[in-house]
Length: 251
Image (cartoon, rainbow, N blue to C red; front, side, top):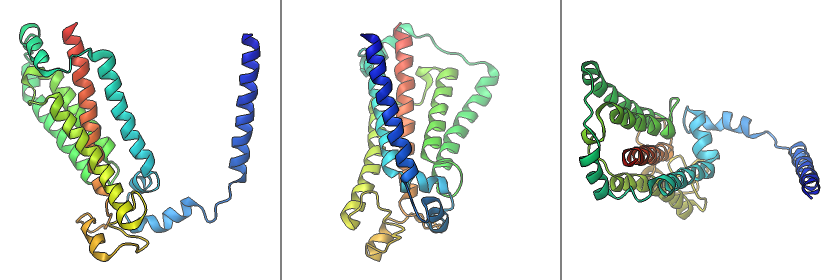
């Protein structure tokens, strides 16, 4: 019986592979996305990676944000076991978690390194449309600063952040992304249309200037999308770190 199932599964995979290969062979795009983006993309922003992430694959990036939300929820349900309740966490920390006393070297250099990581993460986000970087990289770097502060100083000496604050921050980032896409749908008819650049001159100039990021590059809503992703990623990864820390503390 198992052999028959394996044979059927093998034939189905072979048929699927044949269909995919035929589809790829039959695709004819002229002059091609690569040529179009190299020709017109530089009129939006110098960083072609940001253009691809937020313009061509804006839906895909939005899906990745939802994947991170699902990951945080799954980890909280699997390992949290109710530990995300803030009053209980404070009680456990008071009675069970010892104070962390960093060494002299860490006392002098860790705080500066943590501030540098957070500041550099913000810098990568704000300049993500003109230099390598962006919301994902900046948010990850900010979360690494939170992790470093936990390792060196412990939870009790961390800047006061709790799950409610991180939840609001993560929700804010996701709402900014969704609303920018919704504004594009309202004013142009296309979800996630770059109203600031208004490359196809669909919306009035007054609307275009309202959504254009205030710099000389004229990148439109791309920097705002970077900021939204930075808020989302930094809050989501920080939540994962705190949940795992509370599980360890509880155990």
